[in-house]
Image (cartoon, rainbow, N blue to C red; front, side, top):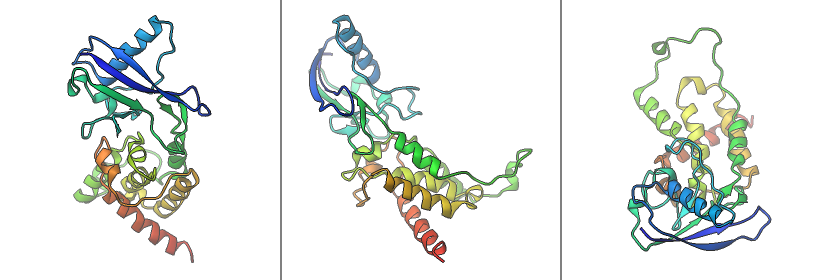
Length: 249
């Protein structure tokens, strides 16, 4: 395959940044998108140029590091797929592919396609802990959890914190991410003790980080590589309202 890559290059967060064009030949259609970028960087290094900086770790759709907006879509054109799981067979010979970083005030660009997503870490940290008994692990059947609640909790827990929801949202809202993290604990008995404090603190931290508000366009769910449902946002809003009323007394 012959490709033209239009890639965002930015030295640091204060640099204005710009797109640069690269021609890449003999791209293996079996290669993953990140492997294609590895080939591009080898070519740039051989030419004595600065390689493109991009995030990656597991390359198995687990860690959420591979944050790229590809042709205007976070993680690219496929549904429920991370960038590292995207393969070049889904593109055509002669295509021009535009690649840029997440765009959000709360995700400042570190370099090129790498953004600082530590705001997500601070939101998680603000949620605190869950109360559990120390000592020997409790026998699994000793804490009954309704099947529906268990399934919903597991679905919410699939969120990998990649930030695609923020990148897809016109307001750069982090509501889907926060709602998933609130929901997966709120739905199980072990997470109910700190539930009120958790939702109040995490929403407050989300606002402090500068994320925008949710206007229910559902772009977050459409672009989430794990298919996290926006129903989690409704659940979090209900819990937040209840916690606000309860804790205002």
